[in-house]
Image 1: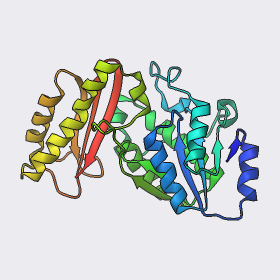
Image 2: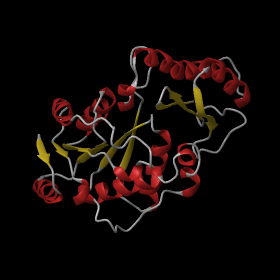
Image 3: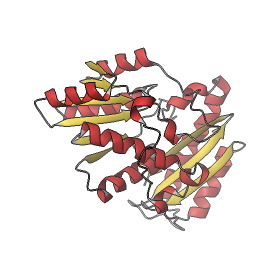
Image 4: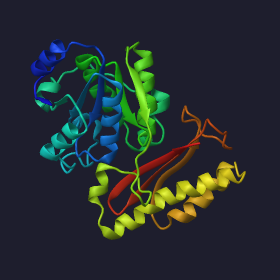
Amino acid sequence: MQILRTIQELKAWRKALNTNDIGFVPTMGALHNGHASLIQKATSENSAVIVSIFVNPKQFLAGEDYTQYPRKEQADLAMAKGCGASACFLPSEDEFYSGDDTLISAPKELASVLEGQIRPGHFDGVCRVLNKFFNLIKPQRAYFGQKDAQQLLIVQKMVKDFFIDIEIKACQIVREADGLAISSRNAYLNEAELLEALKLSRALKKAKSLIDLGTLSSAEIKKAMKEILEPLEIDYIAITDKNLIARDNVVLDNTLILLAVRVGKTRLIDNIWV
């Protein structure tokens, strides 16, 4: 596996490849089994796979955890190599951003609700960094987890709107045996908070069980989920279509149930697609 730290090195690696069959897995590092599943899927579907490791400052708001975000370079490189990655790209902030970049904005309707309402500008930063990666790497396929459902939908729209010739591959959420969605931010949780965090997946399981039994009212489903999540601070519970427009009733095969909850000082998200 090659380690690339500059844009020049990346371009040289890309030019030397004998194939355009390239898979790309963008990450902010602190790799875990969720990332591993993305890299492994990419390696099964592409001749070459590149993983980016870059804590993107442009998608953090003032007061968020940019400086505290876990950075584990050696462990990350070992995991990427073990999963079969061909290369890892670890750019520096100074090289990646000029200070006076041409800006790109996330689509307003998708990016102004839920995460975008609480974290205004976050998805602009996501689109900004991915646009750079896509133009540099020119992958045939890029791999994203469904846990960041809103991000996935925004990336799919950006690729469509800018006619970027990349297939966006949506990959299932990876969970611990107890149901907790795997996340780099789980490292912030102490033992008691990890137990409290299980309420997120339990609330989503409750929603799914109600739907399976024929309850399709969003209000009833949200009420049952809130009861399970008590006494945690809930940023939102949303039941929407795949354009993130709120639904009064679940429509099977075209509904997202999303939630964002604070466990101690840590903010966690999770969702199910039904």
